[in-house]
Length: 104
Image (cartoon, rainbow, N blue to C red; front, side, top):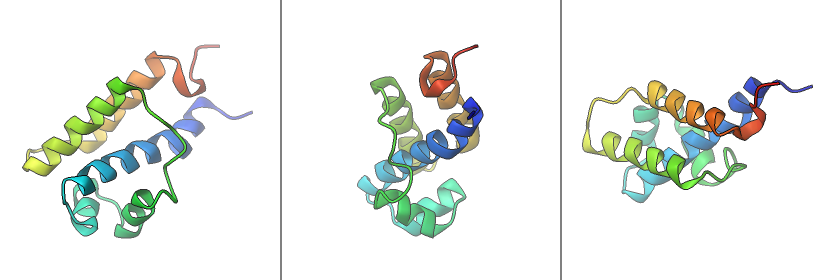
């Protein structure tokens, strides 16, 4: 039996990071700078952007909009707590009952 939290860690968080990395890359931000912004390894950014990692989930429009806001804020140099913002997105997903996180 897989716990809902396992799916969040293995699938959802990498998909969110991959989406943020893709958005930033589309804005012209380098992989090295994306890695710095997200506090992850440059190799992880490369894997996210090449769809070798974090590509299993397609998000709803409201989640995509939140991801775009994070990328915009990071790109503009705003002080951003990426972890808190990712947690907010996970909460939105859980509230929607996605990712197998419905209450038993």
